[in-house]
Image (cartoon, rainbow, N blue to C red; front, top):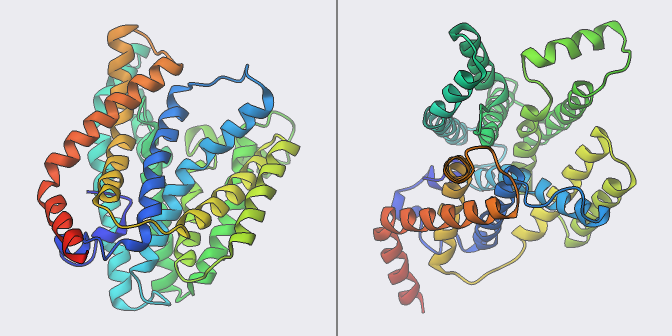
Amino acid sequence: MQPDDPREISAAKTASMTPEKHQRYNSIDLCKFLMAFCVVAIHTHPVDSTINKTLFTLYSVLLDLAVPFFFLAGGFLLGKDLRYPYSDRNSLSKIRKYLMRMVKYYCIWSLIYLPLAISSYRSKGWDIGRSIRSYIQGFFFIGEHFNSWMLWYLLSAIYALILILFLLKYLRCSPETAAKTGSVILLVSIGLTFLSGYDGPLPGWLHFIRTRLPGTIVNGRILLGCFYLPIGILLSRYDVSAFVSVYAFILGLCLRFSADNSFSNGMSAVLCSTGFFVLVKGIKLPDSKIYFVLRKMSTVIYFIHLLVWTAYYSLKYEKITYGVESFLAVSLISTITAAVYVCCRYRKILRKNQRSLINSK
């Protein structure tokens, strides 16, 4: 199953996976596969900051596209499955099912990665009480534990979907208002990230917030889904021209090169990732079962690569090891594992889709 893909929530399984159903989304499936390797690079650091500054900045911008792309794709595909203004019973039910699916996967993958967290606590010599407090904080407020850093995406999406449900169902807000609310939360997120790394003097109330961050959400990252998911939903209804998308992307690049702080980096990521996503979704690719395979593989790679990395460096180096070698090894092993799993798990669907493609010709 694909936890970040709402296309699997509605309709029968086989019907919802036919090539005709997903003809418009092939470019998104392909790009999600590529973005999964950007996530691997985020955690294995194949490139360090000693290279040319311009190249490293471009590399950083590329990596910053990855998680926002998953958020925007999830919101976009969810929006395509809803009926505007998304507050009718059927639409709210689909949002709720998507939320429950995300909760399910967050719990499952947190359990899978639990042994790594326990091992980390033991290596630090923490007692049971401190370990439990740390795990509770990571589970409910941060979305990560030792070597399970990618889980924050699921927790952030959960909070975002709860917000969207609340706004649409109880406040009767429009999707546009939900997106505006997300924009305000984005600014709060950037502000909290700035506070988390600021050591200078602050007014009393800001100082109070900063002192509470280490024991709660640490920084503003967990709030990002509250911006990207509503924007993705809105993009399923409104068309943005390629010119505007390119302009937003270039503006984001200029912002990234002109300054290096929490605000400029945060806004640069928003502009670049949104512009990039709009350009990608506008690309039309011919139907093929390969895109279904790539979509499924992207999910597997995203969620297992840190397990693969932990096993790799533990067996070969007996300590955490970054670099090009780790990136290539983890990418290769994760890709092979994902391909085998998808081909075995979805072989009936793949055969059905292949027959459908042949018949359509």
